[in-house]
Length: 332
Ligand code: BMA
Image (cartoon, rainbow, N blue to C red; front, side):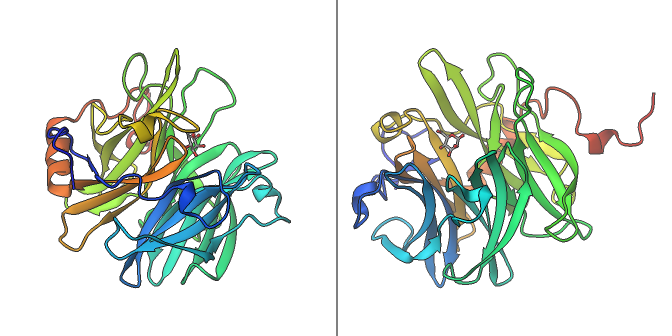
């Protein structure tokens, strides 16, 4: 699947990238990007963010037998913004899919007239949906559910933006007994400072993936440069039983924009994954990402290689303090 020119890259881009583009649609759309991903009825299912020419986005299903080629776009499945809901006034974006039992819980960004927020909808077939409402008020994005509970509580990683500038934009963890009321909010991963690749602004990519070493988390970091932003991705590991505990964090990015389809488009220099799938061999990971806010791509990695990398490349876990869960009970 990889290219000869990238022997040292852990995530190898599919030679057939981009796998989905606006031109693949039967009607005019502006861009297709940032897909959630899951397996459904023996096929890979992507929930694509499709931005039409009004500028608003909705979620559309595409499926493929091998997760690489021969994608079939299914305009009858997916989720469109509800015109009567203020929280979806300007569209819905960037879905993350978590399978729980026979249901698929899709956490997505609602672009409300009051700012982007985090919403949840669930489905069994990607045709009929039950909206579960807003989980986090504006401004909050980049959220996904864990597929299991922890001491009876559901857990959500999300990314609120502080109103006060200069404090950094960090990843948070919140818990809920019922997927409705959320609390115990705490910083999970703090953006670094200074020249680090993940300084100042970070956010979750796909939902966490359970591995032998804990929950593998993929996150993006936004580097502001004189000629715009660069979106790169890195990895962290969370404790299997206590996801508030960060046990490793890669000290360097594992993939950054490089190819033409990542450097040219509506927003150049962006790779933005929202879904990944661990294949039946237990090792092959397919990472699905939007490139340049314009097209959909896939890259492949070996999970064993990723976990080995985490052992040798773990940097500081957090830079602005310890997670509240770790200092609870400490006085003075
Ligand atoms: C983020 C999100 C993503 C987008 C990225 C780059 O804030 O809005 O949907 O891909 O910016 O433009």
